[in-house]
Amino acid sequence: MIRVILPAHLRTLARVDGEVKVDVAAPVTVGAVLDALEAAYPMLRGTIRDQVTRQRRDFLRFFACEQDLSHGPPDTPLPEAVAAGAEPLLVIGAMAGGG
Amino acid sequence: MSRVRVLVGTRKGAFVLTSDGKRDRWDVSGPHFGGWEIYHLKGSPADPNRLYASQSSGWFGQVIQRSNDGGKTWESAGNKFAYDGPTGTHLWYDGTPHPWGFARVWHLEPSLSDPDTVYAGVEDAALFRTTDGGQSWQELPGLRNHASASFWQPGAGGMCLHTILLDPSRPGRMFVAISAAGAFRSDDAGKTWRPVNRGLRSENIPDPTAEVGHCVHHIAMHRSRPGVLFMQKHWDVMRSDDAGDSWREVSGGLPSDFGFPIDVHAHEPETVYVVPIKSDSEHYPPDGKLRVYRSRTGGNEWEALTNGLPQRHCYVNVLRDAMAVDSLDPCGVYFGTTGGQVYASADGGDRWAPIVRDLPSVVSVEVQTLP
Image (cartoon, rainbow over all chains, first blue to last red; front, side, top):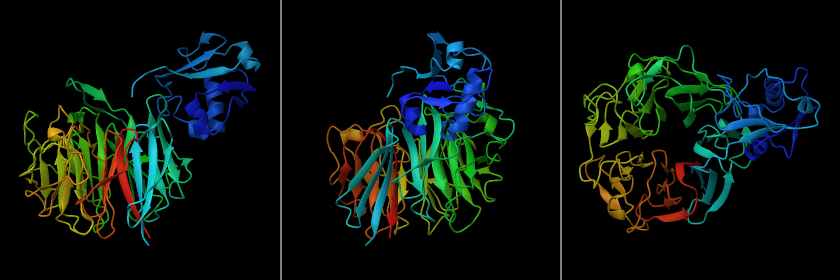
């Protein structure tokens, strides 16, 4: 089980509280976790990565084990602690200001 | 007794305001989708309990929401808006070619007869349609593939398709407006389009009478007379009596002919409402007075409607989709402001009162008249 922590607005959209858990077969990568997340929660499609370009949304980041995993290719393996379910993958909304 | 339901989209959520036919006491529900920008929400004329909402966010992109119970509960619908075929380029602000890219849905226009069919006007300008209640969206690419499209250029708010009008008397005829390309008409259900901007004059483009390039802010029609159109352009209030083939200016007598919304009385096709705004660089009412102007003659003779509206120190704006009418008698008129007020008049504009005063900045207002 991969543990994922979503931003509050996406938890509301997905109607979940707290962490989300998804099954992902090895190798556990950012892309594979997002695939599993979107399959389990179709309302999240397009909200973390663009549905057409598959690019991560500009104001979101992927953190785990005190590393920023946002900028690698989607097939980059996640840390072993995330793959083992010991640590979560954090989807973080930027602390952007504005209206 | 009839009821009205006012659907309000704001910068931080959606609100549903309901009242009986007297329209003096209101129930306010919301925010729905708190914290998200709700550019537009609208109900199906064929099933008033079926509502669609455009929910978007700078962080999380576009979401479409659907309600089957008049806005009490909502469910996420499909949100994949993929352009059909090669996207090509339009002109960017600096005049260079810029690839078409989806940003958000500005306007949702449900079919007049089928609750599952909805048209969506998006930025960068294109028209999409769903026929399965919002689960999937397909582009009607004839508009974006028009020969002029590579010369379209965004307005300050982005290159948005913000207005969609369906002709109730001629199935297949529809109008759209794009900032800043202008107005377009299709007579074949959206397969092919032609610009309908003859008579518009825009001094801030190289050729003031060009076929495309005009910053049309909004268009309105009365359903009993769909060949007559009223337009609020960037500057100028315009009228067409031939379904957009030609336009003439009807701004005469307004304190400013800049503005965003325009609408038509539900029972008087020659009665038109606008909200004059001082200028395109000021975006607030002239003299700090919030005034709706009403013409009972289809333009050129306008009267200020001020009773109940702030007449000093008022510097809000009223955006293009933020005015609507109900179909009760007397006709109710509604508009929302960037200051978060939603004003209502239950007597065609003679007297106004705020339904709510302190919502987030209002982007859109639609009204449903319910049995």
